[in-house]
Image (cartoon, rainbow, N blue to C red; front, side, top):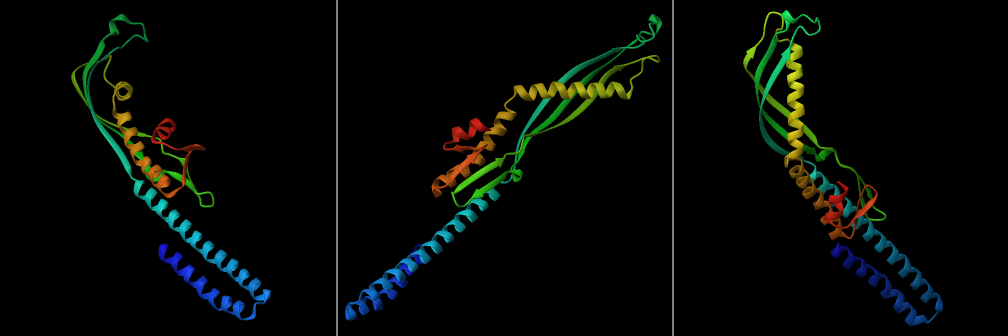
Length: 229
């Protein structure tokens, strides 16, 4: 862009030289008026062309940066848990002889991931006002992969283990794991990594003289961005 500006000034000077010489020879006002018009038009032409080139360059740079940021952030964790499952049968028939407890010792080892797919970031670029507007940041995706093993399983003819029992256990396992995840640092670690990636956009826009907006508000510092996430 420096080379373009130098070339523009050279062209303007080249156009002005013969005009100035003509003014010197004739001294007529008409030549002066023509020179002024040419200078004005030349200035507008080269300035406008330079601005358009700069905006286009800035826009392409911002889009490239967002593309580079658009990756999958994943934080992983491991949780272990032991549950004792008990259930009494025969209660719905109110027959004491049929009341027989079924139980099992359940050992759970679960791998958990908390992820942000930053390729799903949505944004608008206001070239006229030099504003990058982030319109959407994807929600966290939590994936729980439990390995459930049953030990000391006991049941009876009247109260056997069924698919419904295993569904209940799976549901309880996931509920307990969800509580553990909320109390852990998995989510906060993933959020910190998300903030680190989005901060790159803030640094870029600030360095270019652009403004970053999220949720309709201007983001001036990393703290502003953190409060809006």
